[in-house]
Amino acid sequence: MHTPYETYWLALDSIDSQDLTFRISSAGDDESLKRSVESLGLINPPLVQESGGGMHRIISGFRRVDVCRTLDMHRIQVRVVDPAIPDQECAMLAVAENAGQRELDIMETSRALALLGPGLPWKERAGMIKDALFLSEPPNQRRMEQVESLCSMHGEILEGVAEDSIAFPIALKLHEMEEAEALAFARFFRSLALSLGKQREILTLAVEIAARDDLSCQEVLESEEVAAILNDADKDANQKAREARMHLKKARFPQITRAQETFEAEVQGLNLPKGVRLDPPANFEGQVYELRFYFKNINDLIKNHNVIIEIAEKPGLRKILDR
Image 1 (tube, rainbow, N blue to C red):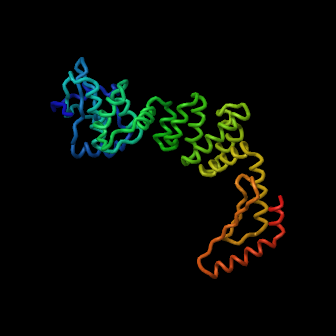
Image 2 (cartoon, rainbow, N blue to C red):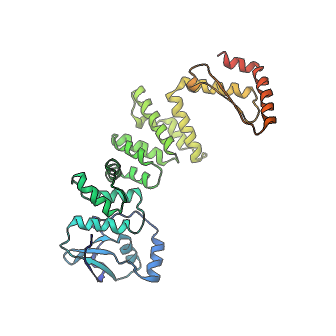
Image 3 (cartoon, helix red, strand yellow):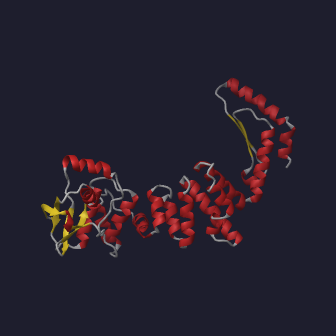
């Protein structure tokens, strides 16, 4: 795609920064950009289009224009495309300009996809997306539609995704929920540093507790017990996350949790040597226990053999196995 443009100087007052139609970029390091403009000027002039009344809308270069305003510049060099160029071609330009400068983050990709052929059949959109994003392979429709859906999510979920406190697969799950439920999860996840796996675990626990006890997920996540954990100023985020997960596990599986606590206390009474571990049956269902130990050489193996015999003779082990 080749779109002709003319380069000339424009008064900043004639550039409309309020028209965000083609804005794609997320917040960046404006201080570095500011220093660059101060030292070298605008190396890559913004791309604009006349929008009527002597004003111009930005197609690409929102941050550059904002920086020029903070530097009290009155006129800047711009590239102006023909006003007859249709919006869809302008959208292609906006996406290509951004994608050609850097790898777009997931939020930027979502905004880009929302600009490219909305409402058109996927076959038509696929070619536009491939070209504008400089993809080497045809885009996957399901994946692209999932990423594009970010644009329609609630602001708190979007902020969580942008700050990496809400994983993208979790954001998709929240998007399917009622708003109050989704926001309760969003606030919970944003207050803690959790991996994708732990976010999935907490989401599942809360949903199952809510279904069993005829509660909303919001009531589960905003209970007095959970609030007390999250509002404890003496605990760091990791401690809060661990305690919140344990609380939800206990609430969801009270019998298994009690059995686990009893088992751990009894294992502690065995005084197992360092490097030796006794694990119960999964979910305490069945009678097969697992004893683990580590060794580096034959002497270690012989030593552990003797340790196993000592453990087998402990009355505490018989108590555990006979439970």
